[in-house]
Image (cartoon, rainbow over all chains, first blue to last red; front, side, top):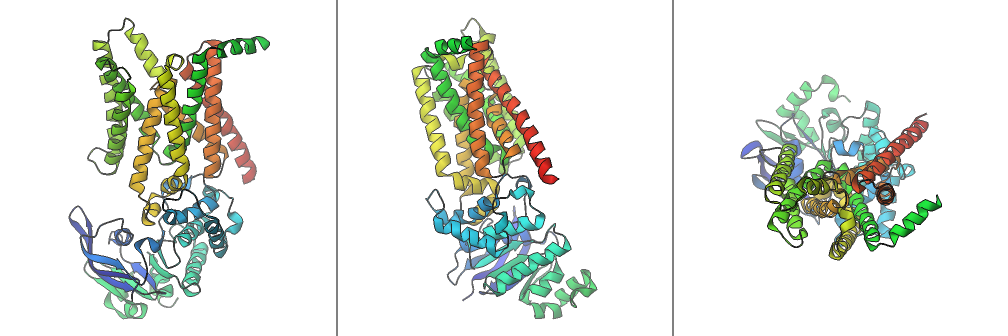
Length: 240
Length: 285
């Protein structure tokens, strides 16, 4: 059974449709990249998948033992966070807030698990450092560690490489690839970076103004939408 | 020096001085706890706007001749806090403009009401006291003191119980909402608690100076400390110290209480900024 199912979903604000007829399914261990032009509704789809935005029609459901709150979310950085006085450990631990329920404080197990997540992403030595003093790549790892605390099943990453230099971007992508291959975590990634999408993803969802595409990476490369979008983004994409 | 202590000892024999110190310390503790969140969420101005609303409500209470003006001020201010929060997300008038409208509107209406209907002989003196809190902290009634103690205790308990959730919502509202925290409800809680603190703090520093209690200690702490917990603790300690020092100096030197406290806060901010700049540079080198 699929972990995540989108059936003929239409998205929009104030009665105005941004994207429609979005349908896809994600199974455990998949690596889905969501691509499309700016304003095509990628971010709105993300919000809808997180239950933060109500679709205009269609339905988004979870299955295979996954609850809507089992999705570890890596949002784009906000202005507030850039100069936020918080230690890395505090931020990573906050990934568990969803599991707190009525309890006011984190348990010992959760603190240990947070430490593991930091070790997994190679930021355990930064635990006591201040978030605002870290580099962009380190900050993304912190937020990824927080997402890992929230779930071990699905990670939903919104432009994880935004604002990172090419070397750090590569490191970020291989980190995500490891989480997918070694830890078996399902990855859903929104990206502008079509080259990376084709290199790492198993499935592609292309949200277009006229129509959408959903299928495996191989199908996408052969498809009309895929060829058009890839050629827009540069010729060398397929070779890489 | 010993004269100063003798003078202080003499003053502390008066219950109203002790009351002033207790209430002052409690209020500054509460306002600094919430201040960190308000500053980080870019809500500093809500505190300022609400304090003007509280002034307007006080004017209404005075005109209506209500025995305990808290009964009017508290609900009105809480209601405005909720309205402001609701409107900031989706409204025709943007959040900051709505806030500015509400705050100057309340100020004008409040002054007009007091001026037209007040039976007092010294209207401008009364208004000055309300705005700058010059003496009201020293004229607290027994029930005022108890209300302040109970409310402060409630604020502190709420803050401690929801500390981790408040942190999550402050740092990243979207993430918190995605993992199932009701971010809207916590924003509401923060707004209501802010309103309560502002009404309490009106006695201490007057309605025009309340924002200082909310923002200065947390901004000072943020200059030096690097974790949320350290910032919260430091800001609480700073706020309590500045208020205590301010109250004591104002008694000794017969200066207005509110302004003296705020000046103590400003001086601390200067010191902490300097320390932050120095340590920051050393680390950078």
